[in-house]
Each structure stands twice: as structure tokens, then as C-alpha cells.
Length: 60
Image: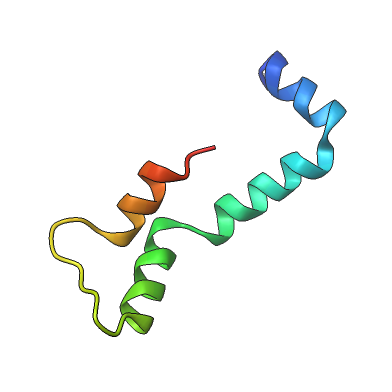
């Protein structure tokens, strides 16, 4: 069902796999954009969304 590479990660590092899944679920693009909009004081979003920047620079 799962790829053999992914199964190996689950066997050898289940905590890291669960942490990655949790982080991916918590930091969804929509949630990151709302967080930015709520807390930005000087910054603004125009053509590039904050989530696009995060996704492009911090891929696992």
C-alpha cells in the first residue's frame, strides 16, 4: 500500500514521520496566509502569498 521507501522511514523513524505529518497538517497554506494577514503590521501580500514563499523555501 505504501511505497517501500516510505515504509522504511516508518519502521526506522516513526516519530519523525509522525512529526512531519503533524507539521504538514498544522501549517497548511490557508492557515499560514491567515496567520500572516492577522499579524502583519508593515508587510502586505500582493502577488506572492506568504504560504507560497514558505512552501517554496522550506520543502522537506
